[in-house]
Structures are given as structure tokens and as C-alpha cells.
Amino acid sequence: MRRQLDSRFARQDSYGDPDRDDHLIRELYQEFGGPLLRQVRKTTGNDLQWAEDVVQETLVRAWRNSAKLTWEPGLLWAWLLTVARRIVIDGRRRRGVRPREVEAPEEDTIAVPDGSDRTLAAIVVADALRGLSVQHREVIEETYLRDRTVSEAAEILGIPPGTVKSRLFYALRALRSALKERGVAS
View 1 (cartoon, rainbow, N blue to C red):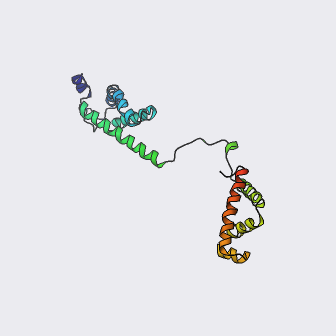
View 2: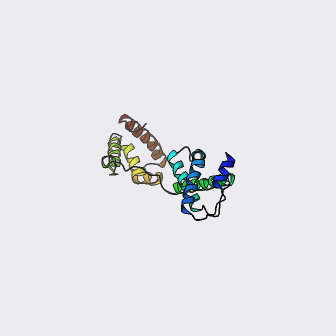
View 3: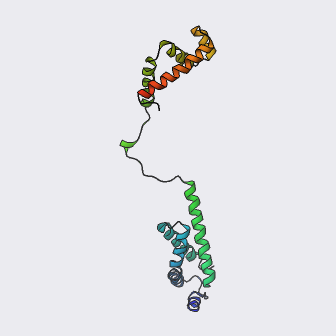
């Protein structure tokens, strides 16, 4: 078989003859197409379509470079494998740079941020705050809603800082409990 292959691919002095080049490429595909496809499928992660594209591109490059190639089967096989491997590497690099293609969602399923979740949460928290005692509500309003320190809140409310801390602890505990009742907090 190898002697027959050697004689089929032996280069003669008819460089540039289109009929001879076409015949050589057909023979090349018949001889190396299947084994090359099997090798390329391994490097493409068993992606048949991509592997077929790589084999086709490899054989096109062999056709373009037919005048320069050494048609000895061992060297030719090595050249084909090298070209195919480089095509796969280039493909991986291109895929790594491009974002993954996805189908556009239907217009009905596109979520548009409208702030309604935030508004709803604010309503639930305000309702829970109204359920707290006046003292607890004042401490939370001064420290969290008006962004004051414990000392500033103590001065405004006219109570000691330790009392503000204590009321704040119990106020947050009561608020958490009220939110749990409404199914908002865990």
C-alpha cells in the first residue's frame, strides 16, 4: 500500500498542471481525509461540524501549496496534522475572544428594571416600622434613616448614648420579627 501511495503522490515535473493538482487533491482526500477527520475530532472536543471544517480548510491549504509540498506520505501526513492543529488553535483563540452567541429572548420575557421591587420593599419596611413602639421607631429613624451616629441621635433625642444603643438593639430585633411575620426576612 505504501509503495502504491508513494507512486501516486510522487511529484513529477508537471508543476502547475491544474488537472494533475485536482487529481492529487482527490487522491489526498481519499487517502488522508478519514484519518485526518478522526484526529481532528479529538482536538475539537468531538465537534463533527467543526472537525469537518478544519479538514476541508487543511485540504484547501494543501491544494494551494501543492507545488511546494513534499508528497512523501509520511511527511505529507505530518504536514496535514500540523496545519490542522494550527487551524484548531486559531479557532479556539477566535472563540475565546468573541462572546458566546445566544438567541435573542422574546420581547415578552425581557425584564425591564423599573424600581418596583425597591418600592415594594420600602412599603413593607415602612409598614413594619409603624408597628414598632415610638421609642424604637425614633431610634431607627435617627440612626439608619437620617444616617446619624449614636452620639448625635442621643443628643437629638435627649437620652444617653447607652440608652440609644440599647433601644436600637431591641428595635432592630422587633423590626426583624415584624418582617418575618410578613414573610420578607428569614
